Image 1 (cartoon, rainbow, N blue to C red):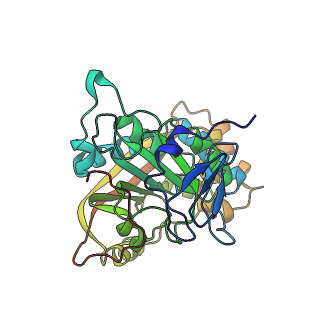
Image 2: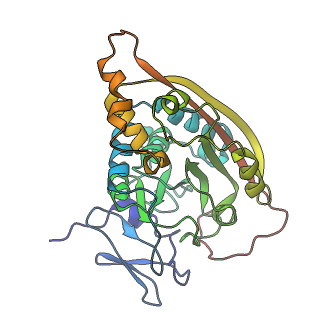
Image 3: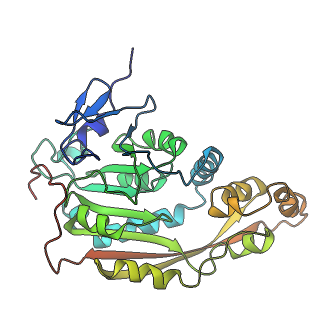
Length: 332
């Protein structure tokens, strides 16, 4: 007997759209289907594929996805997660406006654009969500919100689909039109992921915010010194980021997250394996590079610098954006 569709996915149908034609979707047994009969099957793991055509090439292979899940589950990047949720609390109006339900209850699983009292439910979108670590953290911090995450990695989506009961997860390509209604997202997370500014501004509500996390120059400097071949941070990264975002967004605020993260050999391997550097290093030489961590007599743990730039961006509405797909009424 097939497992039922995840309640969070059912609850997101008011904003999810057919990636082929932009029409609304409905649940038909274990598939989502639009009026034009474009059909998207639900995976047994609890996510739905909303890729169009031949799909996208995954950024994370199976081992990269497993390494990312292990490393993030260790809590090593907890300071970054807390900084992201703090920034969202300070800059996303809908997350502050949404008061908890009576008696301290939270939004019900499977609820769509409004809760049982008729109030609008804030929507958090995580672009390139990986195993769902940051999306889950946002939903823990904001108990009245619902979450949607997408990624191209099937293994990452399996992790993300079970990361939080209020997280709806689908496969998707950030460089294609996003299968979401116009103005349907309140907080859009882009954490170490590619960006599509034109689509981001389209799906964001006028009072929504884009939150971007990217590495600063000294990020993981100690590990890069230890492991030959690790990719350095592009010195033009900030310039290129703002050139891409400025036509669509106004920078609202920017912060730096910087702290020391202790690593043992296993966590260092996972950290290397989950980054783009995994494709540029000699895997056979990696154990030799990290041998000092395993055999060091020093009582002082090996630490690396976590250094990340965080920024919040407000949609620039100098002219009405070209509407792609409209949202169901949500009481905005």
